[in-house]
Image (cartoon, rainbow, N blue to C red; front, side):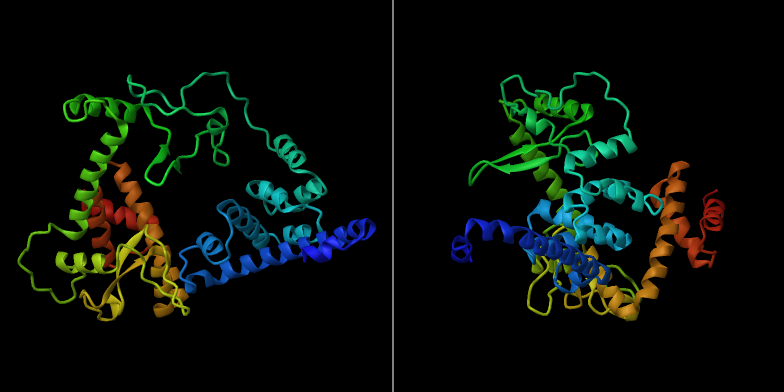
Amino acid sequence: MNALVSALSDRELLARLPEVRGLERRAIAEVIAHLAEVERRRLYLAEACSSMYTFCIERLGYSENEAHTRLQVARLCSQFPAALEALESGSVHLTGLALLCPKVTQANVHELLDEARGKTRREIEALLARRFPRPDVLPSIAPLQPTLLEQGNSVPVTQSEQVAHSAGSTVPRPRVEPLSAASFRVEFTASAELRQKLELAQNLLSHAVSTGDLAALFERALDELLAAELKRRLGAERPRARRSLRAGSRHVPVEVSRAVWERDAFQCTFVDEHGHRCSEKRYITLEHKQPFARGGPPTIDNLALLCKAHNAHRAREVFGEAYIAKKQAEDKTCSKVLSALTHLGFRSKQAKQAVERVRNEGVALDVEPLLRAALAVLA
């Protein structure tokens, strides 16, 4: 291809460039349309990806920023087809549509697209600032990363890094940056309360960590946290007497839970038709291969780790979309009731038991009757 381009005369090169640019524009619009449809059909789940973002990076090879921008625009175009037409015609570029995304509504979509037509990124930013003005920033001097140590252990932050905000936020984005094969720079914004805790930890551990090194303090704290969380999930490593399973119980014995988590290496086990395993290691739960609702036992062979997305995907395959939509609506209603009860001062465990009891009694699954019934139980 480079040889063919190099062989073009100056006139031919300049003449062909607008044509190639048009092909690029139409190709981008087609990619956006494909992404929107893949997400609508949830096809990324069958490809062993827990989200479209993961699919774009792992299967399509996009960078994090490329994936984020394209998904923003794909969702916009899915909701407002006029945005896809603007992208395909070239009247509004990909970056421009990404800027418009947070402000587009059914009422203003055509007006905003018309105003953004043919504008550069800066011009669209100015358009948005004029249409959706934000309050002035008050003059202030605030330490984004106060020095926590007297011994010079704070990490210097450049001005460009301090203003590298996430979209719509004035808080610097947390970063984990590799410095070498064996070391990383970890950077985040701490609250005043966290700073006080760090100083107290430095004082209490001054004999064990004499330098007050933050990395050493965080590692000790994380060791304790991980040990406690692993014990909660997997139980203590010492042998314990096995309890017989009660019929109809959802309880998973600790030794079974430990065996499954270790076997599945703390990662989602969903595998697509090409043998690719889902890479998700967050929001992981123990799930029944043969559903509990259909008699599946809590045994090592019948349990596996699934991420939230693939758990829902399996549930839709087994029970159907209508059933899952109904369960999600019920869960949303119960969540609102639980939130109201805890705001009234009831403990979370009490509130959950009350809601579960009134649900079993057949109270209508609407917020008001469910809340009244739960309050009657708690009172």
